[in-house]
Image 1 (cartoon, one colour):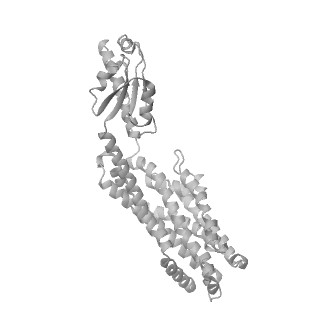
Image 2 (image 1 turned 45 degrees about the horizontal axis):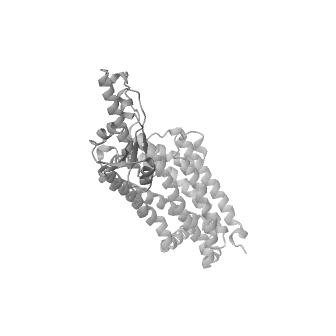
Length: 403
């Protein structure tokens, strides 16, 4: 045990001296990701404000049958009417973003409207434009159609209730935490898993393949410590690194949510509401359950990455062997975001996916004891299997010292 602690301290000092490892383990999840979240939020907020203040440029192809729409659009705020001669020029102006939409009303449109013949009109736009502008154009269409419907019913002396004889009131039994948890619960576990993997990857490469290049691994192998003690010391270091990276990522994401929430409308159900949900998650039971998922996951990642790094001849070869694992890990992590997939007694046995779904259930506050216990058991079993294979691999001389 003394040798394990000594090796653990030695390896821990080594990785803290490596700027690249510190950057990946702490700086990336603690600083870069919050900057991404905050920057994206600022961008969305600015685009929304611009769209709200923007004057929509509405083109109307004039042929004498557009008077009804002209009367309507003239009183709509933040709109500018542009007269056009044909659809060809209208389409060209939309393509170069000179106008936001163009309307064409066929011959006889106004008279057909007066006769209640339900005529149709065409409007041109491009879906590749700013989605907020497209939404504003759609809103204008709905307002115009609603106005025509209301006027028609008034002329016929009919109540608007004739179009909707029954009204339904939907009552959502899901709490705000459950609703937001289903959104955040798919995204945050993805980052947890990635942080764990990245946090394990670089220390594992440095402590095995890196030591081979520096010539320090051979010195360690001929010391009084046994192979198992050397391996366990390295494994503890890599596991701790991945765990710190995951915790730093969680802190970074929560901190960014707090910063964004402080600038959001708390009553709008936006980032402020999300911040309240995140604050509610900081409870001893939620933290304990997350740790029970992340601990075996880090041991699993540490054992796999360390085994591959030990086999590699150089730092570069270890990188080329371990990096593809990220792709394998990403797929089940993303699958946890898909709707309709939840933690049950089957998904609890699927590695990576069970962590994603388990974290999602914890965040949403819908975790069930049975599937969660099975998830923890399965994760510890997978970690033990990976650990056993990795120890055997390290004990084989031909794997450690390859010619």
